[in-house]
Amino acid sequence: MEACLTSTKEISEPANDIQIFPNPANQQINIISNSYLEQLNIYSQTGLKVLNEFTPGNSIDVSSLESGLYFIEINTAKNTYKQKLMIR
Image (tube, rainbow, N blue to C red; front, side, top):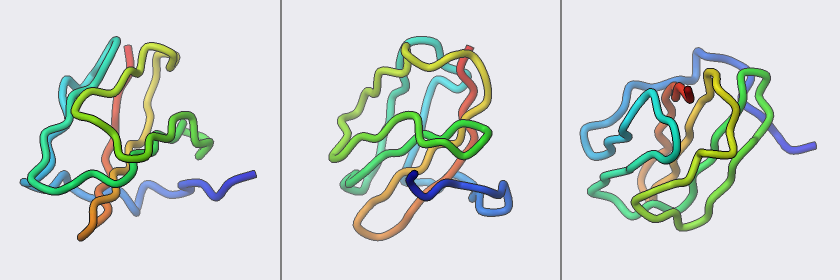
């Protein structure tokens, strides 16, 4: 089993140099960033990693995720950003 996100205390406000939209999402999310994206992880409410992308592009397919609340984590060369993501 992989390490997982276990607390919402770790959630940080989205930084100005990363934008994730739409939120809530249906089929895909779009990411705009001033930084190079190294890795993207999406976790379920129970902390299970449900999506993992290395060197993600600007558009991520989330159509395989069931409706609900998730937590998205984006790693750049400088920082790690975390925020809530709603899938409907």
